[in-house]
Image (cartoon, rainbow, N blue to C red):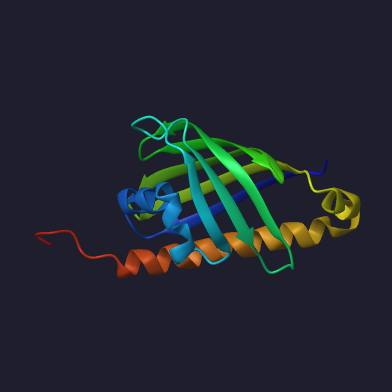
Length: 159
Protein backbone atom coordinates (compact mmCIF):
# COMPACT_ATOMS: atom_id res chain seq x y z
CA UNK A 1 0.00 0.00 0.00
CA UNK A 2 1.06 3.57 -0.64
CA UNK A 3 0.82 5.89 2.37
CA UNK A 4 -0.21 9.55 2.25
CA UNK A 5 -0.40 12.31 4.86
CA UNK A 6 -2.36 15.42 3.93
CA UNK A 7 -3.09 18.57 5.91
CA UNK A 8 -5.63 21.07 4.60
CA UNK A 9 -6.27 24.47 6.17
CA UNK A 10 -9.28 26.63 5.45
CA UNK A 11 -9.53 30.18 6.83
CA UNK A 12 -13.20 31.15 6.89
CA UNK A 13 -14.58 34.52 7.95
CA UNK A 14 -17.50 33.01 9.83
CA UNK A 15 -18.22 31.69 13.31
CA UNK A 16 -17.58 28.02 13.98
CA UNK A 17 -21.22 26.92 14.50
CA UNK A 18 -22.46 27.04 10.86
CA UNK A 19 -19.18 25.55 9.63
CA UNK A 20 -19.47 22.73 12.16
CA UNK A 21 -23.03 22.07 11.02
CA UNK A 22 -22.05 21.91 7.36
CA UNK A 23 -19.14 19.54 8.02
CA UNK A 24 -21.05 17.26 10.37
CA UNK A 25 -24.08 16.94 8.06
CA UNK A 26 -22.08 14.67 5.76
CA UNK A 27 -25.10 13.33 3.86
CA UNK A 28 -25.59 16.87 2.48
CA UNK A 29 -22.04 17.16 1.14
CA UNK A 30 -22.99 16.15 -2.42
CA UNK A 31 -25.22 19.26 -2.57
CA UNK A 32 -22.34 21.69 -2.02
CA UNK A 33 -19.01 19.83 -2.27
CA UNK A 34 -18.06 19.19 -5.87
CA UNK A 35 -16.49 15.77 -6.21
CA UNK A 36 -18.61 14.13 -3.52
CA UNK A 37 -20.88 11.87 -5.53
CA UNK A 38 -22.62 10.15 -2.64
CA UNK A 39 -22.65 9.81 1.11
CA UNK A 40 -24.81 7.01 2.50
CA UNK A 41 -25.43 6.40 6.19
CA UNK A 42 -24.81 2.74 7.01
CA UNK A 43 -25.14 2.99 10.80
CA UNK A 44 -26.27 5.64 13.25
CA UNK A 45 -23.98 6.69 16.02
CA UNK A 46 -24.72 7.87 19.53
CA UNK A 47 -26.22 11.31 20.25
CA UNK A 48 -22.94 13.00 19.23
CA UNK A 49 -22.45 10.77 16.20
CA UNK A 50 -19.72 8.53 17.61
CA UNK A 51 -20.01 5.11 16.03
CA UNK A 52 -21.79 6.37 12.91
CA UNK A 53 -20.61 4.79 9.67
CA UNK A 54 -21.02 6.41 6.24
CA UNK A 55 -19.97 5.25 2.78
CA UNK A 56 -18.40 8.02 0.70
CA UNK A 57 -17.96 7.98 -3.06
CA UNK A 58 -15.66 10.64 -4.53
CA UNK A 59 -14.94 11.64 -8.14
CA UNK A 60 -12.10 14.00 -8.82
CA UNK A 61 -10.17 15.70 -11.61
CA UNK A 62 -8.36 12.45 -12.41
CA UNK A 63 -10.46 9.76 -14.14
CA UNK A 64 -11.18 7.48 -11.20
CA UNK A 65 -13.55 7.15 -8.25
CA UNK A 66 -12.78 6.20 -4.68
CA UNK A 67 -15.22 4.64 -2.26
CA UNK A 68 -14.65 3.98 1.41
CA UNK A 69 -16.48 3.83 4.70
CA UNK A 70 -15.74 6.16 7.56
CA UNK A 71 -16.60 5.42 11.18
CA UNK A 72 -16.76 8.41 13.50
CA UNK A 73 -14.59 7.62 16.51
CA UNK A 74 -14.49 10.94 18.41
CA UNK A 75 -16.64 14.05 18.54
CA UNK A 76 -15.84 17.14 20.61
CA UNK A 77 -18.66 19.51 19.58
CA UNK A 78 -17.48 22.62 17.75
CA UNK A 79 -13.84 21.53 18.19
CA UNK A 80 -12.90 18.15 16.71
CA UNK A 81 -14.17 15.11 14.80
CA UNK A 82 -12.12 11.99 14.15
CA UNK A 83 -12.84 8.92 12.10
CA UNK A 84 -11.37 5.73 10.72
CA UNK A 85 -11.60 4.82 7.02
CA UNK A 86 -11.85 1.35 5.45
CA UNK A 87 -12.15 0.41 1.80
CA UNK A 88 -10.27 1.83 -1.17
CA UNK A 89 -8.63 4.17 1.32
CA UNK A 90 -7.63 2.98 4.77
CA UNK A 91 -6.57 5.23 7.62
CA UNK A 92 -7.69 8.12 9.81
CA UNK A 93 -9.07 11.60 9.36
CA UNK A 94 -9.41 14.48 11.81
CA UNK A 95 -11.32 17.75 11.45
CA UNK A 96 -10.25 20.49 13.89
CA UNK A 97 -12.11 23.80 14.27
CA UNK A 98 -10.57 26.87 15.92
CA UNK A 99 -12.62 30.04 16.24
CA UNK A 100 -10.71 33.32 16.39
CA UNK A 101 -11.65 36.99 16.38
CA UNK A 102 -11.43 36.90 12.56
CA UNK A 103 -13.43 33.75 11.90
CA UNK A 104 -12.65 30.05 11.99
CA UNK A 105 -9.67 27.96 11.01
CA UNK A 106 -10.68 24.53 9.77
CA UNK A 107 -7.93 21.93 9.59
CA UNK A 108 -8.27 18.49 8.06
CA UNK A 109 -5.57 15.89 8.66
CA UNK A 110 -5.91 12.79 6.48
CA UNK A 111 -3.47 9.90 6.95
CA UNK A 112 -4.40 7.12 4.54
CA UNK A 113 -3.13 4.23 2.50
CA UNK A 114 -4.47 3.29 -0.90
CA UNK A 115 -5.71 -0.27 -1.30
CA UNK A 116 -6.36 -0.35 -5.06
CA UNK A 117 -3.63 -2.43 -6.70
CA UNK A 118 -3.28 -0.13 -9.73
CA UNK A 119 -2.84 2.93 -7.49
CA UNK A 120 -0.17 1.21 -5.44
CA UNK A 121 1.60 -0.01 -8.56
CA UNK A 122 1.92 3.48 -10.07
CA UNK A 123 2.29 5.38 -6.77
CA UNK A 124 6.05 5.91 -7.12
CA UNK A 125 5.45 7.89 -10.33
CA UNK A 126 1.90 9.16 -9.80
CA UNK A 127 2.23 10.35 -6.18
CA UNK A 128 2.52 14.04 -7.21
CA UNK A 129 -0.67 13.68 -9.29
CA UNK A 130 -2.53 12.00 -6.41
CA UNK A 131 -1.43 14.78 -4.05
CA UNK A 132 -2.48 17.46 -6.54
CA UNK A 133 -5.82 15.69 -7.02
CA UNK A 134 -6.45 15.62 -3.26
CA UNK A 135 -5.68 19.34 -3.05
CA UNK A 136 -8.13 20.07 -5.89
CA UNK A 137 -10.93 18.15 -4.18
CA UNK A 138 -10.29 19.94 -0.89
CA UNK A 139 -10.28 23.31 -2.69
CA UNK A 140 -13.68 22.39 -4.15
CA UNK A 141 -14.89 21.73 -0.60
CA UNK A 142 -13.62 25.09 0.60
CA UNK A 143 -15.26 26.87 -2.33
CA UNK A 144 -18.55 25.04 -1.84
CA UNK A 145 -18.57 25.68 1.88
CA UNK A 146 -18.01 29.41 1.37
CA UNK A 147 -20.94 29.53 -1.08
CA UNK A 148 -23.11 27.54 1.32
CA UNK A 149 -22.34 29.89 4.20
CA UNK A 150 -23.16 32.97 2.09
CA UNK A 151 -26.47 31.42 1.01
CA UNK A 152 -27.45 30.42 4.56
CA UNK A 153 -30.29 32.46 6.07
CA UNK A 154 -29.39 35.01 8.71
CA UNK A 155 -30.19 34.06 12.33
CA UNK A 156 -33.64 35.04 13.55
CA UNK A 157 -33.80 38.46 15.21
CA UNK A 158 -30.80 39.62 13.09
CA UNK A 159 -28.40 42.17 14.39
